[in-house]
Image (cartoon, rainbow, N blue to C red):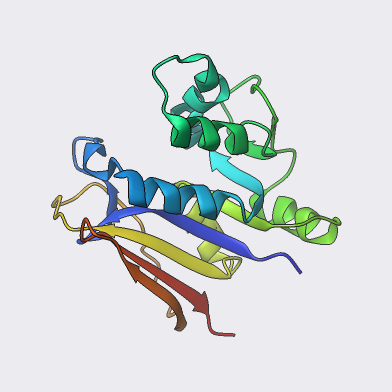
Length: 187
């Protein structure tokens, strides 16, 4: 069965964006960017909320940008054809290899797990991940922790009064002191 993963950049104090909505502190160096390229290779379908979908739209046509380096072109070549499911009540349509969700998050995940296919079901966006976590649908939490305290904003982890035991699966420290932590939900 395909795993459901939630993976994003996060500040040391647990936020994916700061109180001003900014996330400039997550700009990856070459080593971290290469890591994200390898991560996206393991994804079979990406579930996104509206805000993250709109942020990632740049990559749908980034290959037209003459200033991109080889790594950015490689990322674009992987991201662009990746199937995406967008959860939004306000978008009338989506672009590229994306479709609007036709059911609830739980229904979409159940359908995707039942379909033949390779790669993880990746969740992007804290609001969508909070819904998946509340329903016990996340199999792995993957954080790329930046050495910065932003003091507030949008939290990576949902605030539920529910205990979730995790097993550490992998760690990695990059030269920039960014740390990758991969945890599997103990079931």
